[in-house]
Length: 320
Image (cartoon, rainbow, N blue to C red; front, side, top):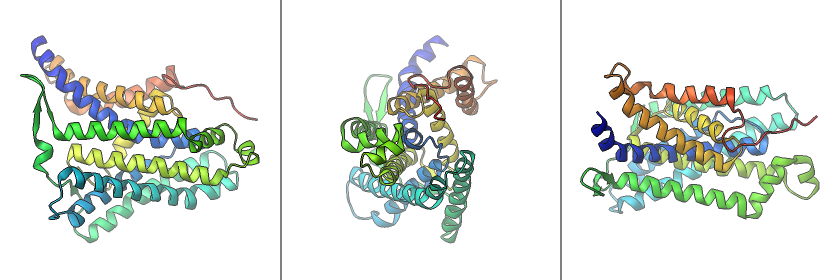
C-alpha cells in the first residue's frame, strides 16, 4: 500500500493544487466583498456559474470552426465570461444590495437577500437554458488540452492542468498587485476601514464598492471557466458546491484577506484531493471518494469553532 501511495502522491498533489487554485480564485470574490462591506455574498457562486456558461456558449457558438488555436479560444472565452460575470456582480450590487445599504438595513437583511439572489439566478439560468433544450452545458472538447507532458516515468501533466495553473496564478498575482500596489487598492482598503471617513477624504464610496464587486465577479467568472475546463461541464446548479467550498477556503485562510483566500484555497484543494484519494485505500473502500465533500465542511466547522479569524486573518473590532 505504501508503494502505491508514493506513486500516486505527485499526481495527487498536482490535482490538489489545480483544485485549490480554482477555489482560491472563487474565494477572492467572497473575501474582497467581505473586506469592503462586511457582507458574505452567497450569490457569488451563481456569478461563478454564469461566467462559465457564458464562456461555454462563446466557445460553442462564437468560436467553433474559426480555426483559432485552442489556447486563444480559451483566453477569449475567459475574457468574455469574466466580463459577463463582473457586470452581473455590479448589477446585483446596484439593484439588490445598495438600496439596503443606503437604508442602513440590519445585517441579517442583506445576508438573506444574497441567498434570494442566488436562487433567482439559478432558476433564471435554468429557464434560459431550457429554452434551447440544453440544461447541461458540456465544455467543448479540444485534443490539445488532453495531451500529456512527461515529467518522469510515473508523473504526467496535461496541457489542461498546465493552462489552469498558469492562468489561475496570473489572475491571483494580478489581483494581489491591484489590491496592494495601486490607488484603487488603497481606496478599497480605506473604504474597508471606514466608509464615512473615506467619503470625507474625497473617495467615491459607491464607485469603489461597485468596482470591488466587478473585480470579484471577474475573478469568479474566470474561475468558473477554469472549473468547467477541468471538470468538463456546467449546469445552473454547478456553482453551489464549489461556491460553498470556496467560502470555506476564504474562512480557512481568513476572510477579508487576499493572501488568506489564496492560502485557504490551495490548502483546502490539496487536503480534499489527498484525503479523497487515500481514505478509500486506508479503509479498503469502506469510505469512498464521494465523502470528500464532508472533509471541506468539517474543516469549515472546526475553523469556525477554534479559529474563527482564519489562519492569517485578523480580529475585527465591533464599531458602536
